[in-house]
Image 1 (cartoon, helix red, strand yellow):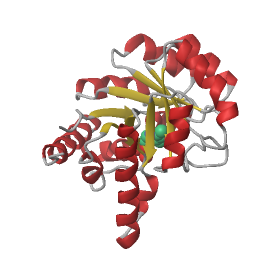
Image 2 (cartoon, helix red, strand yellow):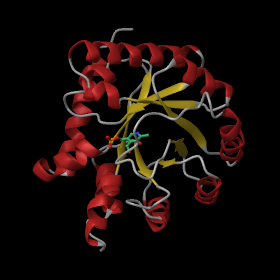
Image 3 (cartoon, protein in one colour):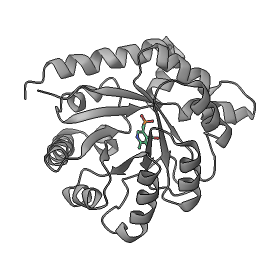
Length: 247
Ligand code: PXP
């Protein structure tokens, strides 16, 4: 039986548009409320070290005003762990962060950074926060996540979403194999980055993936059809793909 598949909505890009003018509009918390009403299962927000989109105040407001579980994306720094432990979101997803990157390019290298990650993950777990590591679909990284005690991994789907032809087949197989391995070693498996109406279905059809986190495409699509409609459409596609899954 495939696992139930949750949809987490990433609202970072609503804040990106707001910050382009430095005012209060469009409000990412209003977007999160709309996502909640459209049937999202969770809200994801990335508090970057440079605060380029989501702000500390946004996190406070999300915690106060949104009933859905918050998945706080954050770099592996003690400042971010302090913030997470103060707010106690449902989940913290540790992502790699470089200031010059446009978005989160590539997964966290959990394998080579176990010594740094271990105490940070331990603090989050002790605070009752569900830790996930945003990693490449690489078995070595999955085993490292398991060794670090993280209960969840999120597989980076960026390379799959950008790929064509043989590369697409290879990237998809990589994600499928990793999702299966995650399940076998007792990790909950999520996926996200770059997913669209075109790329979501094969990922949603992988039965051991429990959650997709999607933002940029839905915020872009909202310009044309509205946020609510774009989220509902994504959910329809995910459900259709999941129904076709038989293992
Ligand atoms: N998951 C993680 C860990 C991310 O960093 C991002 C991008 O912020 C997403 C999911 C969503 O990616 P996108 O905005 O491309 O849908």
